[in-house]
Length: 180
Image (tube, rainbow, N blue to C red):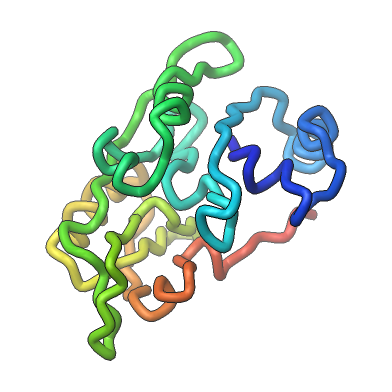
C-alpha cells in the first residue's frame, strides 16, 4: 500500500515506474498484491506518505480513519474510495479499524499551535509493544484502546510526539526498519 506521489516522484525515485516499484516490493518484501493511491505531491515534506493515514494492522485489516478525518487530513476523495474498496489478493474485502484524528489541533510542549490535528496511524510494532503517537489530547486514550484491540498480545504504549510532529514526523517515521 503506497501513494504514487511519494514513490513514483522524480524528487525521490527519478524515472522509476510503478512496475519497477512493484518488482522491488516483491523482491524485498515478498508482496504481490498492491494498493496504489494517487496521493498529492508537494502536499507535505513526504509527498503524502501513506503511513500517516493507512497501515496494515494484519493480513486482513487496514488501520485508517473515518472519511471525514481522512478529508481533514488532506486525503483526496478518490483515494479514500480506492482505500475503502481495496481487496486482498484472493479478492476478499479488508476489515477496517478506523482510528480518529486528535479532537484538537496539536499544540507543542512549548505552546505552539500547529494548526492541524494529529494522526495515530503512524505507530510502530516492537517485540511485545506497540508504540503509538500521542498528543496530550482526549482522543489519545480512544486511539490507544482501539489499536490495543488489534494487538491483544502486545502492550500499547503512547509516546508524546507533539514536538516531533511539528517537523512532520511521528513514531513510524523515526523507527525505520531495515530489510534483511
